[in-house]
Image 1: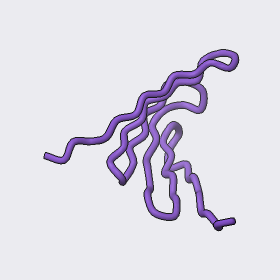
Image 2: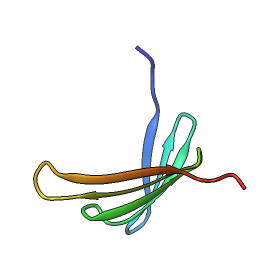
Image 3: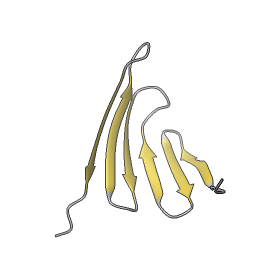
Image 4: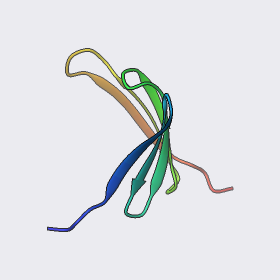
Length: 65
């Protein structure tokens, strides 16, 4: 079983810095509600928790121009 590292640090209300073994990311948005996450690996995720077992998430890769 591999050992993993993950740490989330609140910078400001609604802004979190998420640290992992390789990629890091920044998340903007409230705890419950719409969020946008930008990852150092080039992934951008938009998500939103909905009541009950429902939720919304879309992920895309940044273009390298």
